[in-house]
Image 1 (cartoon, rainbow, N blue to C red):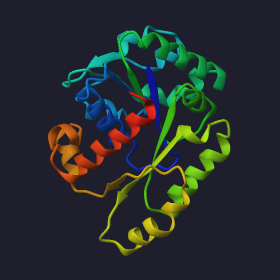
Image 2: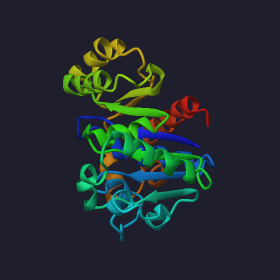
Image 3: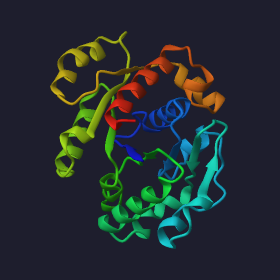
Image 4: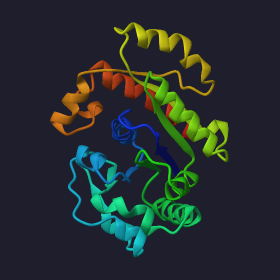
Length: 244
């Protein structure tokens, strides 16, 4: 069993888009996959065609069995642990970093009977509780858009999470528009400064809107568009790092 967190302090960089598309690619590769949606907005849950019918906060505050919150998706070998607005109280429901880490690690261990990969879609915050979740994961995948603020957020995360080994960080460039001179310049001058950067660039694409309209991962609803092929390439890179 492997656990992957999709995390970035800066919002609007495509965390959920990344989580659901990598999960769909994993499932297509016959890897039994669970998306654990930790964002109160529940966007990953919705994009996978599921409506939450239970309050996930009860998993953390009352120790309710996880299985009750897991839903099948329309895609073979892909399930989702649904999120809902109750997760806005997540930091209140879990005492501290250690409790969150131990709870997540125990859950991952139990889920190993049914899944080979768990992907956490994390909210854009760095509380002790979220840090505990990150500690329970094997790798941390970080979408970085071509902006100073996005890199700054990543550097802040690395500085605060100084226990994370270099090989555990998996940053990659997303939302890059090669028609914009500033993006091209950023890719040439700023991106190379990140030694651990994956050699994958996710382009800015109108297909992202189509994905929302169709309420499905782009690799499933429009698998032949460049946007989908970008995520297929990202999955191949991440799969190697996870040794799946």
